Image 1 (spheres, rainbow, N blue to C red):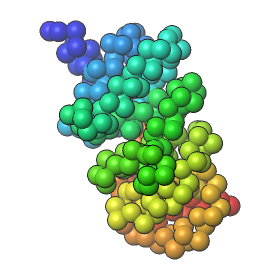
Image 2: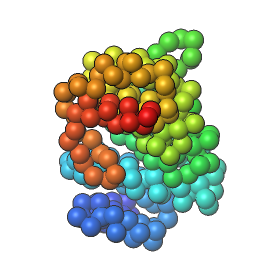
Image 3: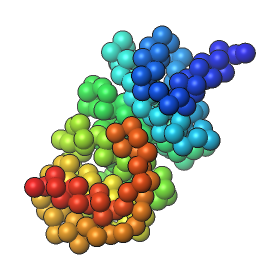
Image 4: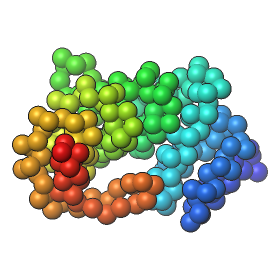
Length: 229
């Protein structure tokens, strides 16, 4: 069995385990560089739980890499950016989740790359953004912005006006996540718009506190309003 397949099997076994959080420490026995390719592969796994958990594991792995060599961490983050580029021929599914988790776990990575993540929702030429036309891929970006705003809201606040646009997104996930971020960055100017969405019944299935959660747009909007106080 190749090194890649061997590591991937071990990592997948950990992430598929009901006790996966306790077992994450086992990943410390691998070099970060050996974990990155299998984790990128597992973001497309057949199991929903493994797909989500691979992002969590990547964030921890990227932080270890940044601590040892920030230059190597930059290379990995640039690789993720390349995955998001149409010219790469790659699928961007899950990549924004990986980017966000890396920034949650490493302040140095966050400082250098947060503007890239936010730029994927920029929707006008003035901001020279990288707006993603595909609504389902934007979901991953908005979810990533929720994660980043939970820990480093000041790095997301400059995207406020584009998050406001997200409240009108036809995709329920994007409305819900945009609302949640606006609450986390204390965007008081969004209060009226959020009040109008607080009873939105559209359902979404997300990953929250490392658990899969079924909720509604309205519930996340009300959480955002609670954050505004």
